[in-house]
Image 1 (cartoon, rainbow, N blue to C red):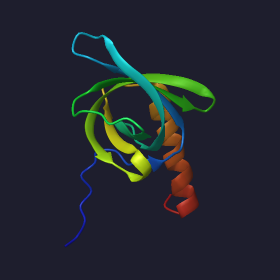
Image 2: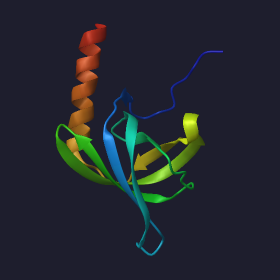
Image 3: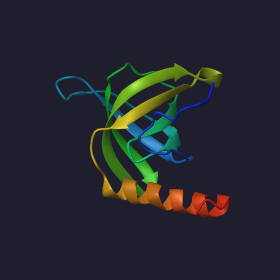
Image 4: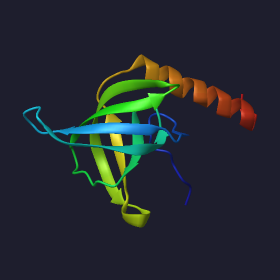
Length: 118
């Protein structure tokens, strides 16, 4: 059976710090914490934390990108247990952030050149 990519945007592996604030339906903060990014695309991010999340949780994220904290809002698509009591959570961006798009495009260009795909 042949693998078929279902994602709209290609993902790039990264290892950046991420801070998050989880919000309830009324917009009140229910908890906050930190983690690290695993990969990112123009449409979302995979983060690793010590906290599990529920499907559809809304998170306000601050991602350390190029020595700058970039903020965006996202929705939890899935959360799976990982190694050593950590959780990997896939988050779909709910806002368009030009800094994130530019960062991902730059990484994709760099990886493409390194792999000789250009």
